[in-house]
Length: 417
Image (cartoon, rainbow, N blue to C red; front, side, top):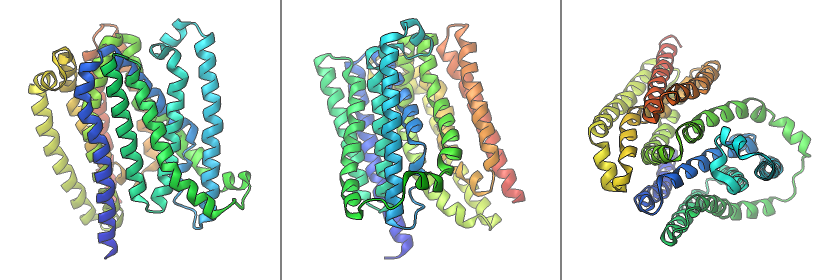
């Protein structure tokens, strides 16, 4: 079998596993929408937002450089350092969350959008720690091309999440909706950990001390971690702001609308992006071929973006009422406003790595800062009018403008590279 075919087969195997896991979660949402209310989905949105930030915060991004060590012993030493960081920082954040729940006035938690979690705040932090642990384990498995184990972990996470949430809904226990996602993260981490720990036992004790390993891979926490943390924070911020400024009912409608759009679109985007980046990186010195590839992907993406945007602009409310129930009509209206933005984000994400391949690293933080400032500003402006739909429209306008600028920068650098 050729290397090209082996790579394609591996990508297909990973893609099928991801599609199965994400597809199972998406199929479960029409069930959950009839078992839980909008307020419950608002809590789920805050839970997922906090967990996403925590998972990046505790990892220090060591998992992103786990591919680099040449020897298994060095890689094992890096894995153990990363796991130690996750456990130590995660324990500290969990204790901090416990203290916040016990000592801080509810008005303080409400001011930062975490009040809906209540006593479940420390568990949301632990869920993020489990996600970070799972991500570290998946990075090790990817290093060893253990794609079957990766798929098993993802599918196990999805199956337990769907089963636990659905059973909780049948019994009328609302906290089961978000606690199931924490159980799923723990299950995925444990499933992925089993082959990893077997490999650690085979390799044996690390030969390097922690300081030497940390110094050797200091670029991850110094450079990769801050930008990743800012990017994740800005991505999750709208869910917290929606609860704080527009109330749980409207925020729950927003959460369902976002998850319904993002799950399938970003799954496709991730698969396309992996293939695109690998091919673009090989063609980066062949400007005509690189431009042709970029234009081809942009053309396909624009056609899909236009078709999806028009379809949901006119029919989103009907689709959402049919799939999720009559009480989710408002979520359909929000989806209609967000579809052009989410679809554009998916297309742009698939080709965004081309800016890095063209040496445009220094421009990336500027876009991160613009989103960090622009997203809350859009929500704050609309909150003075009490209209979350207006906030989503302002956010979409901002996001689309930045996407156009980002891709214009890619095109400009490709022309002069």
